[in-house]
Length: 68
Image 1 (cartoon, rainbow, N blue to C red):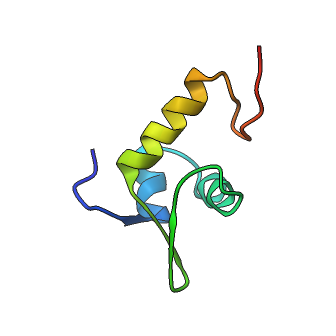
Image 2 (image 1 turned 60 degrees about the horizontal axis):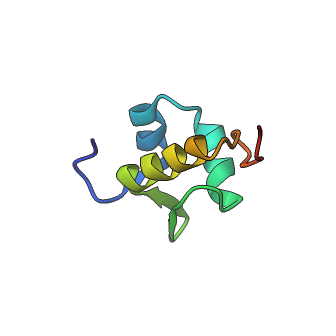
């Protein structure tokens, strides 16, 4: 669990064990919640975890496409 309210994409990638490029692409596409602060994309790890869990529960793949 994250101790900071918002963390950078690099910190989130490390914390979740996900590729940085995938996280930034998902954020830019609006498929995971993020906050643009100046030039940085910032994330609340708990909110991102919940979003990814919801996608999984709905049977969506990494791009948000419904399966099954």
